[in-house]
Image 1 (tube, rainbow, N blue to C red):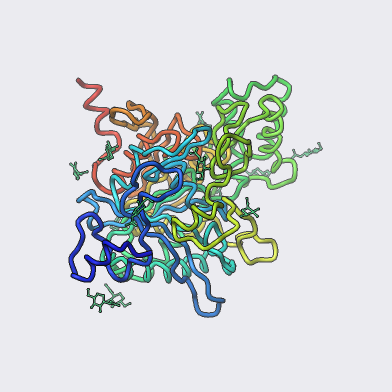
Image 2 (image 1 turned 135 degrees about the vertical axis):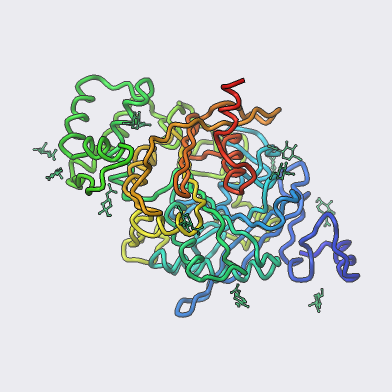
Length: 484
Ligand SMILES: *[C@@H]1O[C@H](CO)[C@@H](O)[C@H](O)[C@H]1NC(C)=O
Ligand SMILES: *[C@@H]1O[C@H](CO)[C@@H](O)[C@H](O)[C@H]1NC(C)=O
Ligand SMILES: *[C@@H]1O[C@H](CO)[C@@H](O)[C@H](O)[C@H]1NC(C)=O
Ligand SMILES: *[C@@H]1O[C@H](CO)[C@@H](O)[C@H](O)[C@H]1NC(C)=O
Ligand SMILES: *[C@@H]1O[C@H](CO)[C@@H](O)[C@H](O)[C@H]1NC(C)=O
Ligand SMILES: *[C@@H]1O[C@H](CO)[C@@H](O)[C@H](O)[C@H]1NC(C)=O
Ligand SMILES: *[C@@H]1O[C@H](CO)[C@@H](O)[C@H](O)[C@H]1NC(C)=O
Ligand SMILES: *[C@@H]1O[C@H](CO)[C@@H](O)[C@H](O)[C@H]1NC(C)=O
Ligand SMILES: *[C@@H]1O[C@H](CO)[C@@H](O)[C@H](O)[C@H]1NC(C)=O
Ligand SMILES: *[C@@H]1O[C@H](CO)[C@@H](O)[C@H](O)[C@H]1NC(C)=O
Ligand SMILES: *[C@@H]1O[C@H](CO)[C@@H](O)[C@H](O)[C@H]1NC(C)=O
Ligand SMILES: *[C@@H]1O[C@H](CO)[C@@H](O)[C@H](O)[C@H]1NC(C)=O
């Protein structure tokens, strides 16, 4: 799309102050920020469209992106990627429900400006990957995380060339299954040793998938229900059944062993993958869903009725607005997306016999190397997430060796300080924990479910400021606060 007025300016070779990234390479991607359906305000400069991710030996395919340059002068040497997980979920979920410049939240009538937009801080690009996800039409060709990383880096070089983003610090951020994608992509970038395109400066994984589900769900499930007794009000017979099962399956000893600071250097007790043991989590899910039919594993305080979701999702409920906004042809035309039968999440995104990812979970794979290669890795976790559990992530961290030592040496208890800001519906104060050792930061957010920028936007904004190096510590103000 070419804006007539701006094309005239381009011919004169003048950089437009309002659209600094607009030139004859980028104009085909330009999005008219005043023409996003249902959005009643100008979302500013942005670019969207497709670039190839075609790796030799695979059919040609491409990835969809939507890029928001920031007007923050501090961002001039940065570029930040946001990826949603799934596998197979569109990153536009993050844009529209979490950290983009406009939000259309479930249960609300219209999009609103997001005062905690990450684009306030840095240049952010949302990418639908791997191919086959969201607006990236496919075919899906990845058979492992190594393919995902190679396809992504191929795309990334073209993206950086198109928008003249060479020699930028690259920050990779995302949530859930992006906890698997990002460490593999970051490791591949670091291995390429080319800072012109792949200068990975930091990595942020929110509520990440970094280990197998037995460790992330079954093993810590009992500790989670004990942590939230009023949200899982089970009778004593069921609780003692769960307690016995957790003991028999070695989940209890795994937690007490791993959540010791520092952890023992000897291997942690092996957890049982026997059929009984791997149903512990689903037994809790069925029991809690009987008590609370609208139980939402991503945010455990939800009750009925579920709000209608403008962009779709696992819980479908009809409301006075769209339930699949990005499936509308006017929306697709406005953001340079090909006509697509759009689903927020698609299954079988890996071209493997079972459609699943055969690569080792990232904490048993490249994550430690990525921590060492950046010394700036942030793992954040919402305490109200019962899809991926806080203590499963912590156990996985305690089982990792990076920068010469295994796990955290000290218990991660320091407060996460979030400043109070006017408006925008996000509180301040001590909203969780934040702890850094040897290049890895762990930050728990107490009031948040899986989607931290949605449930605790001020905390997520603060964590991003830390990742970008704009603030030195997530806890600093706590000490000042408490000594005043
Ligand atoms: C952008 O969209 C608005 C609203 O449809 C329209 O008034 C305006 O002319 C468009 N701008 C350009 C440069 O095309
Ligand atoms: C794009 O602009 C550059 C200079 O800014 C010029 O050298 C080049 O020829 C232009 N390309 C096209 C296709 O107009
Ligand atoms: C959104 O836009 C569509 C198409 O223009 C319109 O039918 C609908 O009423 C709008 N919804 C809201 C909530 O403004
Ligand atoms: C983001 O920028 C807008 C516009 O400048 C501003 O109103 C808002 O307060 C900023 N948000 C934060 C969290 O600083
Ligand atoms: C990165 O690779 C490009 C070629 O793709 C090369 O021109 C450039 O010099 C390399 N940069 C570094 C820092 O190695
Ligand atoms: C995690 O484990 C610790 C130590 O056993 C426990 O105190 C805490 O309540 C657990 N937290 C959650 C959210 O499960
Ligand atoms: C529990 O761990 C012990 C070693 O600590 C091991 O001997 C036993 O087989 C494990 N139990 C199960 C069910 O895996
Ligand atoms: C699994 O369940 C069966 C039948 O209830 C029981 O006999 C067996 O001991 C259980 N195994 C474990 C590891 O809990
Ligand atoms: C998307 O819209 C098309 C019609 O434009 C419809 O056939 C299709 O079922 C819709 N897909 C989803 C997932 O809603
Ligand atoms: C990361 O920090 C360790 C010390 O913990 C240091 O040895 C290493 O050189 C650092 N790596 C980078 C890439 O800065
Ligand atoms: C701990 O790491 C070892 C490999 O170093 C792995 O075999 C084991 O499954 C891991 N345990 C957990 C609970 O992640
Ligand atoms: C730029 O970063 C510095 C700290 O590094 C901060 O003091 C300043 O407020 C930032 N500017 C903007 C516009 O965010």
